[in-house]
Length: 219
Image 1 (cartoon, rainbow, N blue to C red):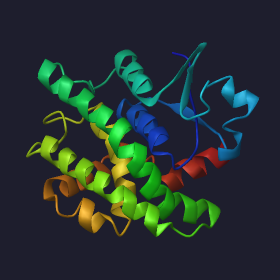
Image 2: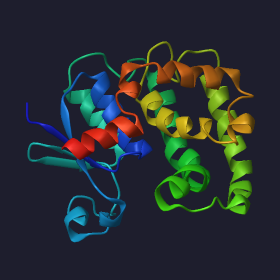
Image 3: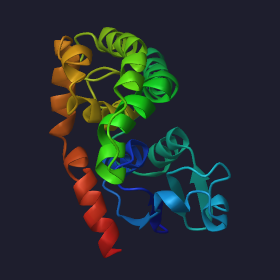
Image 4: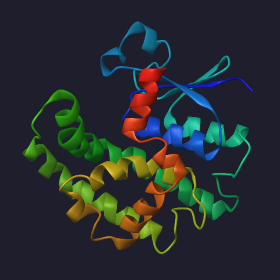
């Protein structure tokens, strides 16, 4: 089988979701780091028309959009299926994945995590507390809904890990290291326990920001 190459920025939760999917499938892959300043370069725009990450190269096949990449990997790689066979469980997986992209990231993660983590760590910026507070009502709603959908199950689609868990966990983990976690995550014991469960998986341990950055430097 041709080599898997993932073009991405270390620390990106979406890149991590793809890498964790590859890890869950036991696949080997190579990381081609993309600097934030290169996203709009002609070279990267040739890979991704909208200048984002990740991008997957698999032989002469190239693919962007995280959900599409995850589903592709689950279809072609052997190992445990990450998409439930049961239609209701699969639909719940799809629902949670779309909640991640439309509501957890847009207006919540891209605000709070940027001002709490990305800006201070990578750019030396002070957090914009007003912007964070403006994003909190939507964040509270998202986390409450994720906790409701999770319920008493170990994973979002049931008893086994699915693509939804691998997509949501990297973003939620960022929140767990912010002061806002005491309002967003800690009150929902099931969601907090789910995150710990995910963090203990080898796929998550192998794809931390630090490990991906080190691997990218060695590439």
